[in-house]
Amino acid sequence: MIASARQPLDSADSYRDGHLSRTAFVSLVILTFITFVGNFTQLQLSSALPTIVKDFGVSVTTGQWLTSVFQLVMGVMVPLTAYLTRRFTTRQIVVTSMLVFTAGSLLAWLGPSFVVVLFGRILEAIGTGVMWPVLQITVFSIYPLSRRGLAMGTVGMAMSVAPAIGPVIGGWQTDANGWRSIFMSLSVIGLVSVLLAFFGLHNFGRSDRDAKADFFSVSLSVFGFGGLMFGFTNIEAHPFTHPLVWVPIVVGVAGIVWFVVRQIHMSMVYQAWKASHESSSGLRRGQWAPKPALLNLGVLRNRSFTVGTICAALSFFAFSSIMVIIPLYIQNDRGYSATMSGLIMLPGAIGQCIAQFCGGRLLDRFGARPVALVGSSTLLIGTIMMSLIGADTWIWWVSISQFTRQIGMGLVLMPITTWSLNCLARQEVSAGSAVTNTVRQIAGAIGAPVMVITMETLTRVFHSAGLNTTLANIDGVKWTLRISACFVLAQLLLVMFGVRGQGAGSAREAAQVALGRIRMR
Image (tube, rainbow, N blue to C red):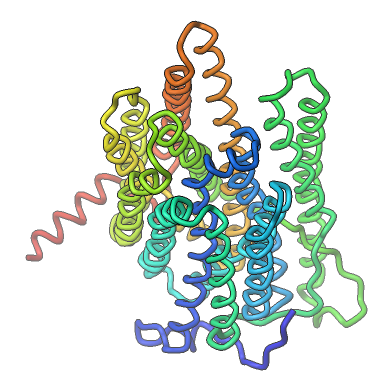
């Protein structure tokens, strides 16, 4: 890690008289840009995926590992955030992360085989995996409670620009110069990010060189979630009874169970030790102390936080798969280019950008419940609209449907996440951010291969029933989207019956606030 002599900024230095200080503003912009780079990278390959699959001669299920493994590795990295932010300074974390990201981009750019490119993607994910939690923790440490909704909506809007331009630029680069040009540009962006972080970023919070992490838990999470994904991926090529399917799944489930039990046990031991030393003068150097849990699952005892986390997971599970499936439909079944695929998806991402910003403002005014209800309903309507596609559907119907879906995502994800974190104590925000980001990243990583496998299984069924290849593919996509709609419906019901309590608000309260503002005029 890179040493820094800069003094860390606290909330008093960062936020004065209702405004950010110049130093905090510049640092927040840099953190937002670098986090944007991670989101941009995650989705940029969605339009290029059909071309990469053809170039390397791999199956679609194997090829989508380039997107799903990115989410999986980010999910594994997120739990380390709580440890990294305690042990290292903000600049050390960000500069080192961007160096790893740049190395991964170079490797993927020059890699001669699919495996090498995949390894480059893993390094990219390692480099960007901690950035969103670091940005979240920074925002919550700077802004007062009454301003967090607007702040999170603002940075969330910046994050939503990534899916707006990522697939478009990725598709254009693929058509113009080949998919490798994507990684060439990411190498340059990574280098610029390193320079920005090194020369312009200030530290937030203090580091503790005695902080410890449980890397055995990291190994368990890798084997657990990686094994589960690997087993599901092999279902396409082998029956469920094949050892390459059931063995990784069993190993994955066992790893996840062991991981969860270990986190609960370590959290209990650490909290008991901490309580017994609260009255003492502090821990002396060299004195034994237990390691804190990698992922403090104790925050899930907070009902509101748990509801918010499950909502985010369901959203990511349903949403991430569509970002893989729809470009396949547009390019393989309808014959459009990668650039056109990106343009068709562009309005939706712009809509999510705007909705996410508005969602933050609406959260501050009305609470999470009315905003999330509208968002979940809109997301469900858009998913049902998308499931009506066919061989001759007006192609911009796909764009309109995706626009509707992403408006709903923007009105659900940021308000629910911000509300659930607001329900935690200040000292629990770091752990809560790690938990919610881990859960939703892993839900997205698992959602893509599960839905792609579902699509390909249904396609084989329809093909064996007499449909030609294209029509069978389209019917497979349609029914997969209908399954996705069921997950969105479950999320809507969870919001309807679960989002209550402090800061949640209600439709009646929202109406009263709106009427009060009208009377004041």
